[in-house]
Image 1 (cartoon, helix red, strand yellow):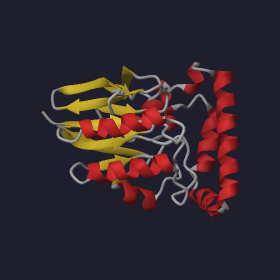
Image 2 (cartoon, helix red, strand yellow; image 1 turned 45 degrees about the vertical axis):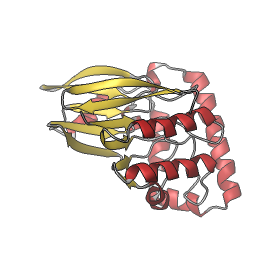
Image 3 (cartoon, helix red, strand yellow; image 1 turned 60 degrees about the vertical axis):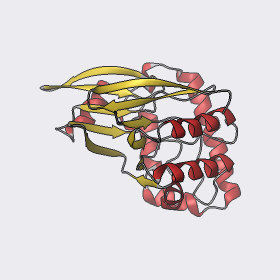
Length: 247
């Protein structure tokens, strides 16, 4: 029985060898029974521009390119890799999608995104997000010397870690009912909502107006473990991934 696979929040880098191996292992496991692979952001820990891929990104591109020869791969950027562009996508055989996308899978209408836009209680982050997603700002960032971009990325990661220590896993860093209903209001046919970002894998039910929608939060990857959402005609299931020692 064939399926469609969704992943997010892998945060791959040269400092995550086990996760890099797990990703390659997962792609091999999905080769023969998958209709499509959707990567919903934060595939990488950081993205400084298509002209600066690290070894992990180069290896991921090669593995994805081979996988995409028989299975289409789609990518929505996350808050860590929003600068990923057409050059890298082509090298990886991926189709870039907008920040939100509606699709019909096995008769069900799904809305997919990275998910950070629905964390509406975190107003300071939403302001930062609006600035950084501005195309003019991105063009300026990508035009900077590589040394400057590395410094900016390091500063942003440090600021992100500091903020995580301050707010932890509190409700301010999670998706809100308001954010969910705002997203769904623009997609009145959606029956299923799929996203990552929050690192809180779970299944939720939301009532917005006269309709109830199921929301699937994708697993994050860490410590040699990960997970994915498998969508089949008979339903959806969040499944774990564990690195095999022989790989």
